Image (cartoon, rainbow, N blue to C red; front, side, top):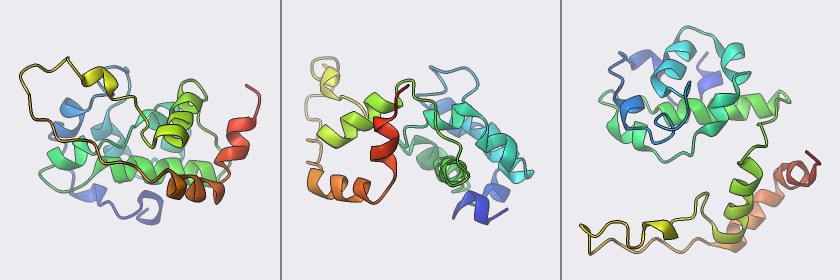
Length: 154
């Protein structure tokens, strides 16, 4: 089971649900519950998890990792599950993902952060986002099958 969930240690999770309560995706998508994914991985339900389309909704924001008192990192569990799914030929649903990957290729970010400007008047001194190295991102993506997947017809 350890190989299937990467470096994360789902066995340490005691289901405090801090990961899910802070997850921006779980607030938007019913059925996206990082603590449940960790519990299922812990119990060995890897095939069920990699066939669950909701695992692909994770935006890898690391909120769950930061909130976990046991240092479990549900994001690492989910990332490893999506990698395993991809290796087994299970492709992610294309709804929203192609635009998200397209945004990564053109801007370096999965999401457009410009909407934040002017929305948070209570915070005047937000740090500038780091400038992504698009050349490195594109070189890395060339080594994957992502380009072929993005060119597929829906």
